[in-house]
Structures are given as C-alpha cells and as structure tokens.
Image: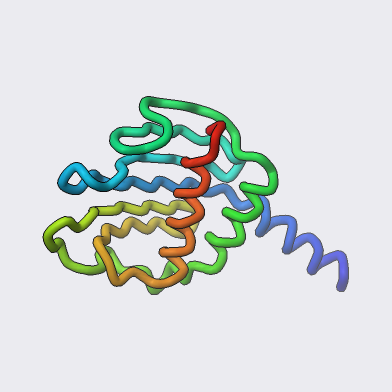
Length: 134
C-alpha cells in the first residue's frame, strides 16, 4: 500500500506543464513583461516596459522557486478558471495567463476580479522577475 501511494505522488510531481504569463502596459504606468516557464524550471522572459530587466533572458529557476511555483499551481482550481475576469476600465492592466498540462489547457485574460489563487500566483511571478538575477 505504501509503495502504491508513493508511486502516485512521484507520478503527479513529475507531470509536465507550461505556464505563460503576460502583463500588458497600461497608459505608461504599469510594468509589462512576458514569462514562460516549463515544469523543469526553464524559463524565457521578455521585459517590455517599466521592469527591472528589459529585453529577453533565458534561464532556470532555483529548486526552491520551482517548488513554490508548483505549490501555487496546485492550489489553483483550474476547472473553475473562466476565460476572463473583470472589465477593461481606465488605467486597467490586461493580464493573460496560460497553463497547459497533458489534461488541462487553460487560458484566461483578466483586468481584475480574478480568484485569490491567481493573484497569489501573479504576485510570485512578479517576485521572480524582479529579483536581481533572472
């Protein structure tokens, strides 16, 4: 029994996924960037406007960063994530989140009113892109 449960956890932990997040600029005030991260920690980043790192960068997340990202991704109830949240109002920033696994293909665009789990995920991505070395 223990070995079966153990194998299941290993299988779930090794599931391949791709996450892409894009923040659009808003009236020359908001930061704008795109980051794409794979389940192995490899990322492609493009800083576009008002960000710490402008231009394109590639790299690999540290194991602790990847573990935290996996935790945040597992909290999101992807089956409940709609295709859009909030309305485009003055000075709103469009954000687009795409998450793909073998079984899940989700894309959502939002300005506001997103679930807390998406806010937490976005906040962590902001932390990653704002660190000294990305």
